[in-house]
Length: 561
Image (cartoon, rainbow, N blue to C red):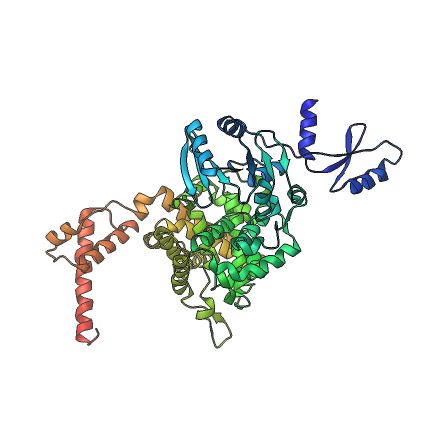
């Protein structure tokens, strides 16, 4: 019985409820609203109206922190962990407000035998990191009050949903701005009229949290966001990058990016993108470039969802196209997620770069647009030019070198899988030589190219996509993944049959660029299955040199450079 009451209290925490004989018969945001609801159905019964207090956050980690803090010292759990508790979610990263952040963080780290880092001496913030046996980490941040009291600290925060605190000693909830009610009403509301002006990165954070939790942004807060958008150039590139990556890696990235556009932020953070809006495309495209780009983000999220280790089979089967993704590519689910989870930077994964590449993959279509005599619109060279434009934006946002390299490869080669798909649909199989060249040019980024191509295909055709074309796209994807994960030693990185010294000594050649070209030609034909022994490789090399010299002689005789 106690467990039932505890579960009921958690379900209605922060809400007004009406009870008849101890049972909840109505719930709502105010005493009057709940009373009216209950009276309609239980007019002849005694109705008790009660406010259900917010349930204190409880976890083993929190208990460990509680035992580590000095007795009687005021410490408050704030922000996301309290918000998530109201939503019934667990949170591994805990933020605390206290009198002396760095000092307390060092004390807690010593007590828990954890790592300590002074994060920001100006704002008196220290971090404690606990490494768990399974490789995961718990992060505890301790910050001194921003202001002269807890209430001043909460009122100076970004949004009311993040301005709720719990006394770590007593479990008492402090909610001066009605944050719990906003959480219940699924509403993002600024803590003050100056909240967005004080730190305009909060515009991106609010959009991200709205997408992550399925919340709506309060109309007045939207106005404040729009008014503060012009301040975004004052934000450091690193902070902009980190919030953008969180948006792109989180739920509903297409909706979040659309919100960024509606609120007028793109000219200040991603200035190349507004030109995509209204840029028409010929069939088979059904959208303009901007709408297509958003659709790619949406479909990429959906495809990665059904290929995740914890995918929802019922949800996947509700979309027959993604159901086919599971059928054709599901065997590589673990490998794909390992690939996407690799860090290209200490704090950022390959998945983040893939979504940024999806956002920028068609960025140079406006600059490469041409119209043929038959009226068909073409964008020749938009892939190679787009790779450079995206890299320039990445450099402005302080991407790491590995991230920039991955970004360039994905955008430069993003049309290649489409070419193989069209050939497959026409009855031409993907050759071993084509597979070798694909991964020679893209290496690990080939996996990203496959995933982006599938999302790009769905966004291009949308409701006009035929089962035949989608099956061809999936067959090509499966062929490429088979080669990468199961036949790499045979088709992608075959063991060398000869080396440069072999060619120089056996064929009496001089060292130089020609030897490198010859070795590559041998590797390509070996991967294609045409060369299997050293003798075959050397024979091929002799023929190749003869052909190369004959071609050079003809060019010389004809006066060509």
